[in-house]
Amino acid sequence: MFSLNEQKAIELGESGEKAVREQNEYDALQYIGYLRELGEELLNADFETDLKRVAISLRNIGNKAVQKRSESVASSTVEAIDALAEPSVEKDFSNALWSFSKAVQEIGKGAAQMEMLETAEIAVKALEIIGRGAVAKKMEVVTLWTTMALEEIGYLAGKKQLEDLSNAAKTAREGIITASEDNGFIPREQIVRYPQLISQTVSEFSDMQNLQPAGYEGSRPNEEFTEDEFFEGEVEEEEPETGSSGKEK
Image (cartoon, helix red, strand yellow):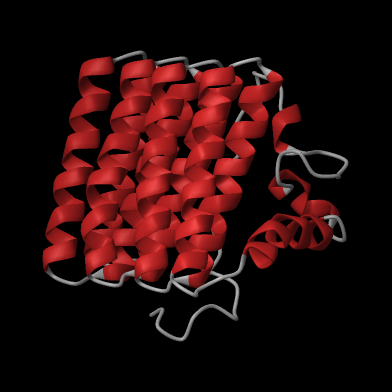
């Protein structure tokens, strides 16, 4: 059963998605603002589990905005996530940050595919901030996930011949890897191998093919979604895989 805060986040998210579908930009931006305010309240109260639901709602609005090619709404969702992610680093909210990084990953990849440069560029910057924060706080899962997300955005941008975006994503990823090595945290070899391990795991389960990392083998990698089905039928996100840093909550 959801808490009252989670239920509120769900309702705000659904209302925001509806506004995007109806091309009501003003209302969509309003609901993004309400979700950001709710997220700030949850941060102050140290309600990390409820905060994850805010991340999911913002993700869903952002994905729908990308599908509808609403640049201002998509960019605003990433900016709201970024604003909530930074204080989450300071509070060591590793699970919430994993949700935030997944949200930015999906919106950023969609924006790269749809050639929505403003949104994609904001996503790259947000992922770099989250990734560097994760390194500083020794958050293994979040560090690995953000580097994989940046690699995917760089790959998709390259396919669209968006060289500036592709280079920005590669530079951001390299910055996180270098910071990790300088801090004696996760070695480059493990970071490079991570998406390959994800790809191998996903390939064994036919119902998980939509999770295949972009640029890796698989019968249905993310970048092959058509515009009509893009991010339709969102599934509930799972808990982080085990084996992350002992400092994560």
